Image 1 (cartoon, helix red, strand yellow):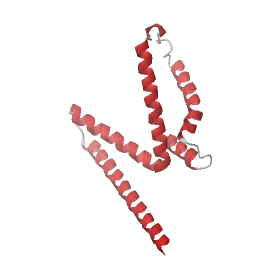
Image 2 (cartoon, helix red, strand yellow; image 1 turned 90 degrees about the vertical axis):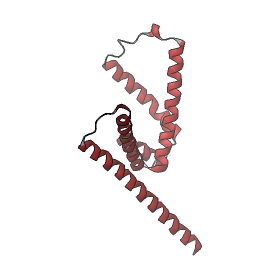
Image 3 (spheres, one colour; image 1 turned 180 degrees about the vertical axis):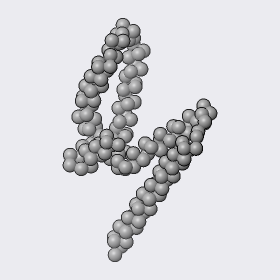
Image 4 (cartoon, helix red, strand yellow; image 1 turned 120 degrees about the horizontal axis):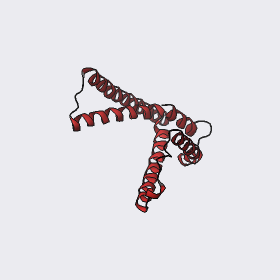
Length: 148
């Protein structure tokens, strides 16, 4: 939630950075942070450069392009919809992932988990309804003001 709020504030208040500008400024720091954590955790010790062929490079390149596109889309969605909406959507996504895994692998769901799933879905639906009603009434007010 902190990352979502921070990126929203950087895009909508003060600096008003675009998604690409935000990625341009944040990516080098994120890369350094990831490399530092990988080094501290000892992941460099198991890295074998000789096993890295052209197919591996191509897969890594395609993965990077897809990740870049996902970040641009995510930042634009955050800018347009808001941090709270993005956080609620993330919670719904987590619940749908759980529901899908239950359906695919027949994992038993206890009463407490089922209650949490239901509350999350109902809360997301309620929030969606409040947003739609709020935007509809705001449009109606604007239409009436323009007509008067």
